[in-house]
Amino acid sequence: MLFIAILSGFITPFDGSAVNIALPAIGSEFHMDAIALSWVATAYLLSSALFLVPFGKIADIYGRKKIFLYGITLFSLSSLIMTMAFSSEMLIGIRVMQGIGSAMIFGTGVAIVTSVFPPGERGKALGTYITAVYIGLSVGPLLGGAMTQYLGWRSIFFVNVPIGITAIILILWKIKGEWAECRGRSST
Image 1 (cartoon, rainbow, N blue to C red):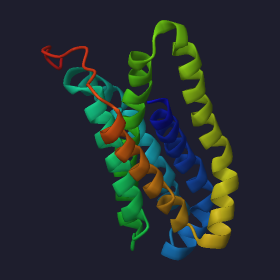
Image 2 (cartoon, rainbow, N blue to C red):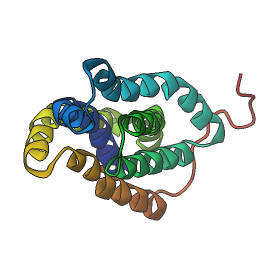
Image 3 (cartoon, rainbow, N blue to C red):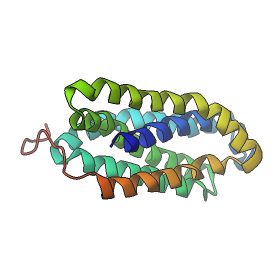
Image 4 (cartoon, helix red, strand yellow):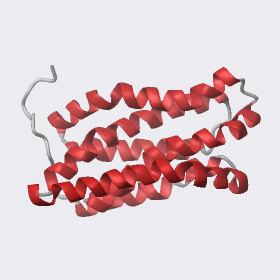
């Protein structure tokens, strides 16, 4: 479980920070002005923030593993579609979907790690998870810049796909059971 959490904890902040470096290349390809270009980053952050708490509550009711799996699937599928974007409007719309997937991942990832590890090991597991998040944030600009320079801006999104597929396979293969602490309660 910790390896899956590390993968998911890395790709979402990596994507957010790497895309910021690729914005000039994206803007050049789609002839976007500064306001439209700012929406590429803002759409992701806004949808992530907007849906984080609701998906955390939904996961508590219907199952954290299920929402976590759906989130990684949505994030990976959105990343794949981003590699085929043909307009600025499509790019921004898919970034919203990617942000929703990110909210589903972050709304459940820490809760699952907390549920899986016993109290004596929980701090170490959470520290490892948070380290993966900060590594993603830190290396995003460096790797994103190099990838944009040598492979094009679409490569930033493509790299999420194999990582996401690996996480999906591991979730389906290794994680047994479900965590839903509010099962049977209403969603209000």
